[in-house]
Length: 249
Image (cartoon, rainbow, N blue to C red; front, top):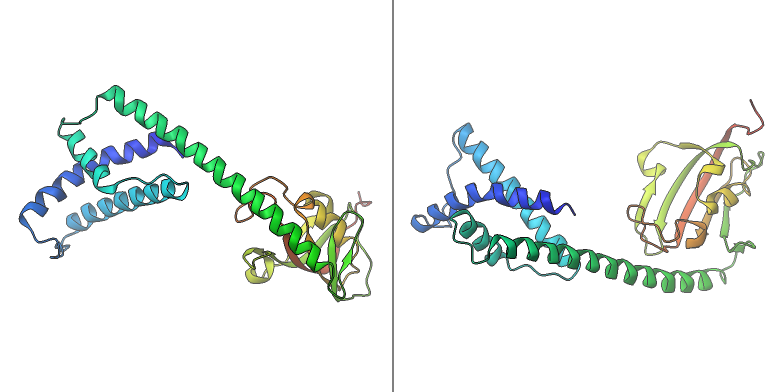
């Protein structure tokens, strides 16, 4: 989180917050404002954008266990703009510093909790999955199923391959899918996660396999989009062709 950006946006919102508060003293909140001119729309759109940003920030804090009283947040903006802040400038800066520290600690705790949950659930999933008929387990711990067995060549680690794939977490969440994009992917096998490098080499061209990849053969303790640390991954991969051999120069 960029705390300076947050403070800048909050400061900017003072101008609009004061106007809104003054209007609310004389207008019924249930009566919509008039947005008839471009100038009115400009002002409202900027205010709405700032309001959405503040709401997102408050939600982000709440996501790591820090609840912000929104009434006090607005009151602080207004009183600060009027020069009536109940905190000195030094107290404001120290409080914001402490808030940022608490936010980072909250992020770390949430990440650690998710990681531990992923480890436990991943191990349980793999233990049960390996018992299913048709599932093969390699020495590394990679699990795979043959959905369609092709009759083409098998790629080498240094080859570049063209594939279609569909990747999910063990709860079914889709995190990446060339199938959904409708566009196959091409990449060198030695520049992807270990589970892919090992698994795709097992596939003759024309095959479709399902891989169940332990976190140590995937992203490990790294965060990658929807993939949180120590996530077990599931991929359905169709090997369309070998685009280039690693022996070619």
